[in-house]
Length: 410
Image 1 (cartoon, one colour):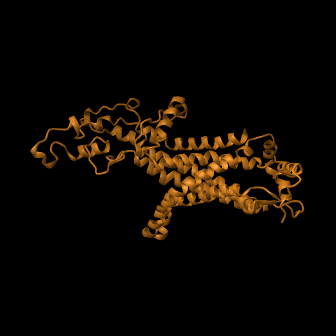
Image 2 (image 1 turned 120 degrees about the horizontal axis):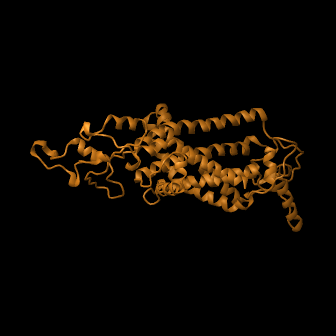
Image 3 (image 1 turned 30 degrees about the vertical axis):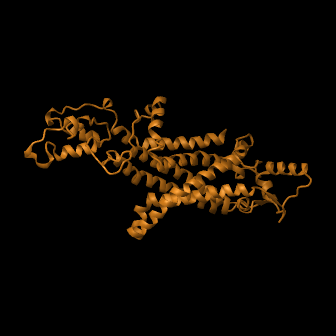
């Protein structure tokens, strides 16, 4: 099943990209048993130079000693008049308790993690989001557009080789086109609004200012959260309607060997969907499904946490240790769950956007007659014979078996 394996390869590579990029962050605050204890007698139990150097290098640091005397619970020092309104607790004690979520906090908000005032591990997420994610994700999209432009300049538009017949064949029914455009339109909106949320502060604020960006970002968030449901519905429709036509078969091998006709003479035979379209289909289903799941997790982070259980499964498999990541954290706060989900959501989205850009190119300016399939639903018979000859034979056989049916013509 080459198409399915290719899609899974893309997904696994995306996992590898995420884990390799986040390896220092995952390793920094690991379990105390995995850290090297420092001699803190010279500092009276406080942070040592060795602790600071290890933290700067991204190594594991035992922070258990910093949780002592946070000013809360049984460890709180006795109240003394000389220390004023703070009683027996000093400012460092209180802020240390806030950092490690040990302080006695009361809020008017009643919900999960509402008392977390400082999310200790938030900086690695912010730095990765504003650094590697924007850089590599942006260059992936720009590079894809440049490669497609070069391909167009070198190869030109793929024309219909034979003489046009003037006869058409119905390629996609109305419900199929509706499902396709529901999925395509929602994905384009989600991609644009997602880029606004991810890159707006870096590119749009300098260009338009804070107030215009605030209005753009507000509407982008509303569109992104609500159009997501249309994307999920479209994804389900496309899968149900076309999965049977996208199962790999032996014709895909020859199609891939000739790169769909770019190498060799003539066009390789193909059924309703050729191997290239099957790769697009499975990439959309696998990556789009992952985007949908992580998106729902972001919309409902307290109801659908993903990564703690995923990390537990990965630890049991032994894959993180083989990759040099050690043991992944299996206990995550709601904020950490959202940070991992957001990064995964964005990384997979960048990969799928690059794939869909190639799909849009072929379906529009890249190939003559291709847009008609999803435009009117009817394609030129000569185009169909050149690109999907086996499918045309199947259609003609069904028509021969039902004499009352006629082929739509222009």
